[in-house]
Amino acid sequence: MRVLVLGGTGSIGSALVRELVCRGHQVFGLARSETAAAKLRQLAATPLSGDIGSPEAWIATLPEVDAAIHAACDFSTDMGTIDRRLLDRLLPTLAHQPHRPRFIYTGGCWLFGATGDGIATEETPFHPLPAFAWMVPQIRRVLASSEVAGIVVHPAMVYEAEGGVFQRFAREARSGETVRVVESEAVRWPLVHRGDIATLYALALEQAPAGSSYVGASIEGFSVDRIARAFARRFGKPDEAPLIVSSDAIATELGEWARGYALDQRLSGAKARHELGWAPKHLDPEAEIMRGR
Ligand SMILES: NC(=O)c1ccc[n+]([C@@H]2O[C@H](COP(=O)([O-])OP(=O)(O)OC[C@H]3O[C@@H](n4cnc5c(N)ncnc54)[C@H](OP(=O)(O)O)[C@@H]3O)[C@@H](O)[C@H]2O)c1
Image (cartoon, rainbow, N blue to C red):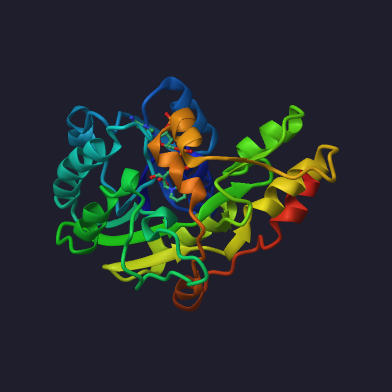
């Protein structure tokens, strides 16, 4: 398929571009800078110059595609407005493609709120983190769209050994600081390795029916205390407990969206496993942290 990827240089998007290219798809990636364009070329994708904040500047020049995948976000206070304006332009434009394209929209685990011991699935009503509440109407719009065959993927917390949501833990432990966790060491995060979430997007692209959603969680809920202690161990402090910081403090440091780090959640990826044959390979994050890869 000819696939347009928005956010193809990001944590999720760069793994996704690599996976799509490996599977023989032809990938076009939106790039807002020469650095992003170079990264896309390195991944064997064709860069298209453009910014999600100004779709009018590039939308008319899109190549013919069979599908588009949206995994771009700038995490600014304007991200909801930017995303609404983007879909207002992008979906009608895609509707003029020769064949109704497939369109995968990225939701996320933080739309399901704190689940405690419950396990959220695609059927669970949304209870979004306020900073991401704008995503809910966007998701409804994509799933009901007549312009595109809309599909939604909800990634869990996306990690790799020292990257993604583990990046801050690795940085703090490596520089000798005590690794911080937000609100409580009892918080659990649903996890997925970036390679595995990339495979889920590819399977959804190739097989998912229009109007379907998939939760991309390979581990339902993993203790942040264990993650923080694994990093402390790896960098020479085997007995160090994490430092608890408040969600107010992390929101001041990173933005309101970062309050999501305090959500105690469990999510199930069973639907993707059963319907799409998704078989995540990375199921032992502590071992990956200790190996560093
Ligand atoms: N990572 C997770 O754990 C996770 C979990 C659930 C949901 N999600 C959702 O997944 C999406 C992607 O997350 P991510 O972690 O992959 O983010 P990320 O690593 O920060 O990547 C963001 C991507 O968006 C691009 N981008 C940002 N602003 C842009 C603009 N104005 N114009 C064009 N491109 C722009 C970035 O390009 P540049 O290279 O130019 O910066 C990059 O490719 C977000 O909606 C996020 O909420 C992520």
